[in-house]
Amino acid sequence: VDLGGGMMRRNPYIRKLEQFRELSEADKQLLEDAVVQIVDVGSREDIVVQGSKPEHVHLLIEGWAARYKIVGDGDRNIMAYLIPGDLCDVHIALLDWMDHSIAALTACKVGLIPLASMERVLSESRSLSRALTRSMLVDEAILREWLVSFGARSAEMRTAHFLCEMLLRFKAIGRADGDSFDMPLTQLELGDTMGLSTVHMNRTLKKLRSKGFIEVQDKRVTICDTEALMEFCNFDPLYLHQTQRDASCPRQPSPRS
Amino acid sequence: VDLGGGMMRRNPYIRKLEQFRELSEADKQLLEDAVVQIVDVGSREDIVVQGSKPEHVHLLIEGWAARYKIVGDGDRNIMAYLIPGDLCDVHIALLDWMDHSIAALTACKVGLIPLASMERVLSESRSLSRALTRSMLVDEAILREWLVSFGARSAEMRTAHFLCEMLLRFKAIGRADGDSFDMPLTQLELGDTMGLSTVHMNRTLKKLRSKGFIEVQDKRVTICDTEALMEFCNFDPLYLHQTQRDASCPRQPSPRS
DNA sequence: CGCTTAGTTGACTCTTCTCAAAAGCAGTGG
DNA sequence: CCACTGCTTTTGAGAAGAGTCAACTAAGCG
Image (cartoon, rainbow over all chains, first blue to last red; front, side, top):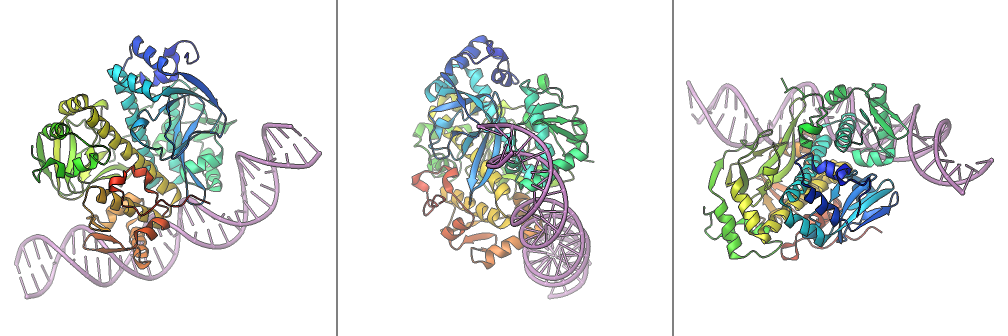
């Protein structure tokens, strides 16, 4: 299946994997061939639901999706975002059920890779297997950093930190325009992500805006002074494990004195 | 290296891996042989430090350890606990640096597995490789559940949830005595875990005690009414992906009506 | 044009933090 | 044996952060 744009190497997924190591043409072809179908998923539709055992690995090609859980009396919790190029649950075959759901937050294009094909890719190409495992490790690192955000950062810093992270992630797949990127989320969804009520999410964004850190227009976020914002929220990009090639963060935050 | 207790299959690590699938004698031997040395790490000492690239994969054989980060002006954040049988960072070779540190919270015994040996184990035994990857997936699921705890649960529920989780994890490695287990943590450390100040951590524990959910004595936690406590904090053990064999949780929480 | 959803703001309540101090406990040296 | 010290636990009181309820505005859509 052709993943759009014709050239596989222009695909955000390949671009993401190549952050780490060059992939041979054969590898790229192998991965492309594994995608048997591309489906359109409507905004707010579930891609994978909690408790099920998916038959495919999903490759997000276009749009925003999120991992979430519903807890207690209907409180939704977003635990991760998937953006174009993110392959979710490469190793899902090893678990018996999904412990959370994945939903499209916007209209999405999703590539389907049968479990058996995924298995074949992993066993046939050592470098693809490494690249994929590495990408899973980075997802885990992001989860840990989010945990730090919740444990040690205020609502304002937490939100700022999230925006810095998304900026770097979008830059890495070539979908950021300077220091701005599309973020088609409602404040309710953002609140479910940051663990804040809608009201407080709104006030928090307002503060970030009034401090001149960010601008928001038409679902597009612009970070006015990246360096200042990173300083403000103690953002240290190391956890994203991006390599020099795409590192666009100005400098390492200075060690604590 | 003999991992203590003589019989490898009595080792908590093997026990943990076998939650998922039976391992052959050869597999067990392979894993045991990969451990080239067992070192003692003193309480509060670092096992792996942020920014470094470890030369070994670490197998925690005895004691409590924690993944943590220091953020901003010295605020420590604990993002995960390692208990006997936990193998940390199987795939660390794929990343260029640790994005967090791991410290012993008590005196620990740690098995060292050279990266090359780990690599060999992974390539030689398909079932070990699967078991290890699965265990990594569960670690990730735990991270996600912690995130839910922070986003959607009060300090009291969050703490209760944590205790339920640790009880099940200790049961799975045969280190729980009925519904109680050793938890040699200070309230400062617990607070760093739950994202609470020491003062509030103390008050939170007091509430859980006064409600009759738990008892604490000599660094030993007893959960008085497991079912009630799980109900109280919306604990759903699915995310631990434990199998029937060791599942000791009374029942599935009823689906939301 | 009316409907629905998303964003904004105010007022009040509740949770959690911070500062401060006391009490319990263990180790240390005289 | 005892005073001293440092760490942990506990409690009190006031301050700050975040949630809730409610109303109002703005934007998209048939």
